[in-house]
Length: 109
Image (cartoon, rainbow, N blue to C red; front, side, top):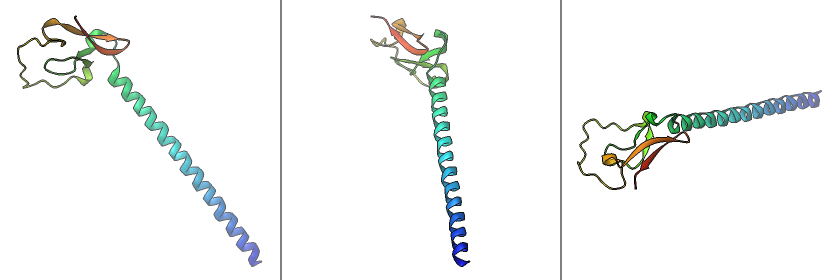
């Protein structure tokens, strides 16, 4: 009778352990799926554009690249030199454009 009780207790403990392991594995799977989904959403929100108007220079002064308007730098109180630096968007040497849903600087040659 004591042997049967020990066997029953052992089976219950093993059953509980199996249930806990399954629960942990499911939680890990859900966590990984959520992280992948958040990363995918972040990339698509930050890197996407639909028209040239969605894109702005990536820096306040002498920009060489462009970003979506949601990532526009805060240029309040920033003073830039008035020179037209080569290979920048300065003085109409280029423009921001949406190319394949990514903001790109199109620089004149």
